[in-house]
Image (tube, rainbow, N blue to C red; front, side):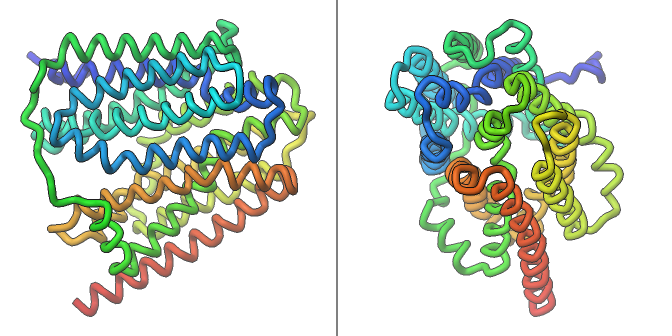
Length: 401
């Protein structure tokens, strides 16, 4: 009899789960602190660090289309293997880097590895699990494990004294080596009957965005959401250093833990609490908490940790309410025969994450934390306005149809 507590999945799915948790936990032992390393070792400015991180994300987004199609043609196993190898090389380069140029090479390779692994890992779940409920359950478990890894990683790093240490890059490289060996052992060559989809193209997604006004407004709104949210990855660690808060590495670990723990523990409860709300109200509520968090970040001081913790909790609460609605927005907007193209085009949301390090670094350099979080607050207000416009365009289109 199958256990209802421990779900039954094929062994390939468990490899994805184990690999996701292991690499995510090790990744977060060091990645949030990489900006501190670059700042301390090479006196790099927030703008210089922001440009490096932005380029990495842009590369990841751009190659995501290409590698997603390549996984259809050459198989998910091949792409995951190549991604793991790229990650091993990336973190080894970062461990041995002795100049900003080598840091840039390592960060760039990391962006490529993400674009190889992520689309293929998600597609494996769809290839193997044909029941929609099982597939969604597996995707939810993977998302849950990503957040658990993000919560555990920084705390383990602090406990072992591994944060902001170059040797930790080798630990992360080792985690990807373990993932690689698991994939080689469990996934057989040619395993799975992956679907071949030659219809989606980069140009096609651009055409869809251009022709659908409601979707175009929605994309702009969600780019801004990601621009605001993305400040916690690169700009927040630098803001902690500038604020001269006591023990910034430890505080950053606690803030990252609060973010992941809030998402993990409140996801179920917020879904139940908001399930009777309209999608428009739910998205606005999520953005409201994002905006509120920016005000609290604006008011923080170096003497007290309390406001830092409150700000991160509010941001995380906004995330857990808003982010699950993003796919629902698309699903309701997209025609039945173009859902795949719409979801593919929605990758443009991540340009907000790509711009976040550069924009945040520039604002931090020119105006400090006050300028940064004031701008982010007003961007949140703009997002609510754009969501409202997109919703009204969709309603008019429905009435016309």
